Amino acid sequence: MIRTAVITLSDKGSRGERQDLSGPAITEMVKEIGAVVEFYEVIPDEKELIKERLLAYCNKVDLILTTGGTGLSPRDVTPEATLGVIDREIPGIAEAMRAGGMKKTNRAMLSRAVAGVRGGTLIINMPGSPKAIRECLEIVMEVIPHAVEKIRGSTEDCAVTEKG
Image (cartoon, rainbow, N blue to C red; front, side, top):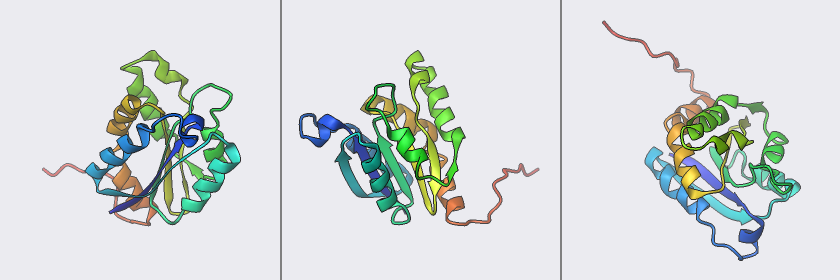
């Protein structure tokens, strides 16, 4: 089981002016890898608040998935907040999401999403739209359980060998 927190970053959503469709999309999709969402919240795009909430969930869950705040608008501060709390960045996750997204739209190159580890928790920034979330999660979902196992301290070899 992968204990998970989902944080939606949305000024309008946090004020009740817009229904959050992204957080529920994540919640539904992560069930496929045995993840259980233990915490879910919608908060405004405030860098210090985002950092506070990320820190509150670290080491309480195995995985934090954020949605929103990864674009170019002045209020998009999720990557900066995430970089402010992680111990180690995992650039390949965000790179894979951008590369996969580029197959659908050239706007994927504008994503500033990051991924990394703090303590025993994997943190991944996701886009804000349900469609983009589905596309990005499909790309990285298969590696999340392995990443969580390694973060938990698994010493099992990562190499795949052919028998023959």
